[in-house]
Every structure is written in structure tokens, then in C-alpha cells.
Image (cartoon, rainbow, N blue to C red):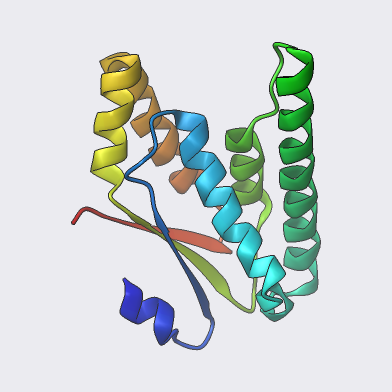
Length: 150
């Protein structure tokens, strides 16, 4: 996976994320969102088509708001929390890039599933698997994923 990231083929942006420390579903989607956020910070989303740039910009704004709201929620003890999972799924559904495909390479996915099962039970882990599968099946042309266990 690292070789793909270091030597990307034309038309692809590769992003590597290790999720072995995830204990919660929202931690997983936070890591994926933050990894995609780096693409914007690095200026790589300039490679996307105009429509995809707008979708990606909206996603980055949502991630920024979630971070800010999460801090405010922690200090005010409000129960409603913004969701990285929702922002990430919306990106998957709407991103349809004609110029480049963003490939999110997820390392240690089975470990994350085991961690979620230990922390929250098998039903939560199964729900997490179904959510990931459903999201990847509904994703637009602009994003793909590669999951690997090492």
C-alpha cells in the first residue's frame, strides 16, 4: 500500500490510514476524514474536477465544524454530537470526480473490527461492517477504498 502512495499512477490520489487503535465507529470515520483532510491541506484536491472540488470543499468545512463542535460539546456537556460517519458517507455519495480517483487505503481494518467488538459487542462490530460495505457500494466514482490486514 505504501508503494502505491509513494508512486501514484496518473489519475489517482492515494491516502493511507492505519485504524488499529480505533475502539469506536466514530473514531474510525474521524481518522478517515482527517486523512482526507490532508489531501486538501496538501493542495492535492486541485487535481479534482470543479464539481468534485466543491463537494470536497463542503466535506472539509463539515469536518472543521465537527472538530469545533466536538470541543464545544465536551466543554458544555451537550449530548448531541456531530458525526464524522455522516460527513464521510455524504462525501462518498456526492464525490464524482472525472479527473482523479481518491483511494483510501485502510490498514489493520480487522483489528479495528475486533476492537469495536470487544468495546461495544458483536452487534456493534457487525453494524460497523455493514455500514462500511454499504458506503463503499453506494460510493460515487470519485473515491475507492482498499482494506488490508497485516
